[in-house]
Length: 202
Image 1 (cartoon, rainbow, N blue to C red):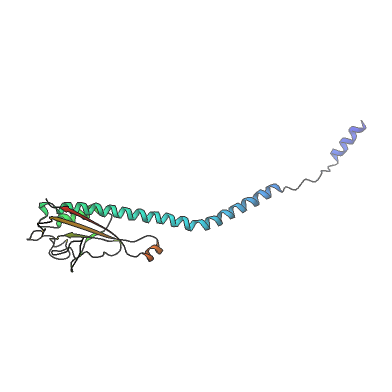
Image 2: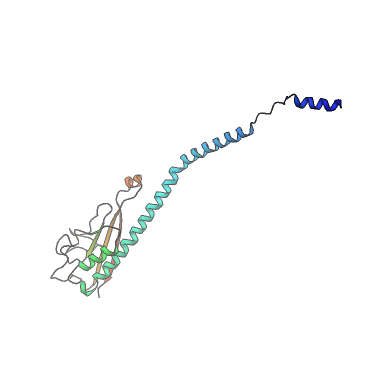
């Protein structure tokens, strides 16, 4: 009975041994804050390179798409120029080039008029000219248009001056590509994408 009384007295006295300090949760919180800070620093270091790769990939894709589009437009334009129905006019060729080259502002080269030179061996005053940024120039050889702009003067009473020995017609399209990355545009301001399609006349 004495032992029982002693136990009851210890419980009723209300004396509780001091609890150990809870240091583990504080350490976890500090570790998490440190990890977040480290992640922010790493992102700040890596993000410029990451965005550089992203925009470079976009520019390369734009460049490839531009070349594909203007190549297709030049092929279709040269094929139209080789037909007998285009002996006295450039109108159908211009329409075909502008139709196929949708997505790119393709205009007629100011020098694409009668008497122009072969774009593969340009010479004289009438030869392909460099377009302004983000614009494409279409150049037809031999051209029928009597004056610039060729769109408004695309028909003539004189047929296309095709050399009897060669019987070739050609359409050249140049596109002045502008990169999205400013420092690339600063070092390479004149990126000209050019394609020439040559077809034998029918």
